[in-house]
Length: 83
Image (cartoon, rainbow, N blue to C red):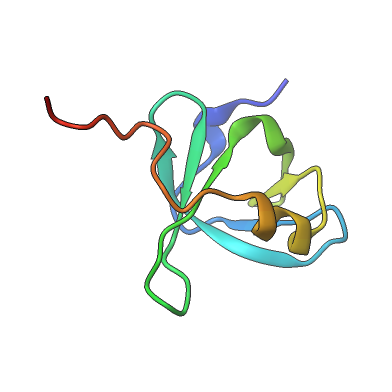
């Protein structure tokens, strides 16, 4: 069981192959991690369900980095349009 309270800003996010592919910005609503902006200035979001462990100050996810970057979201999963 993952203790999400251990996930902190600026923690590296490491893929299943051991390479860092992102950095935590903060937890976003229920169930997501907002990542720091990439080189183009874009935030991305990954679900907490991808996290397999938190080890040595790193968030470890269950997929290779290239697959994670194909599957992450560029839109906040908690976005609600004003009515």
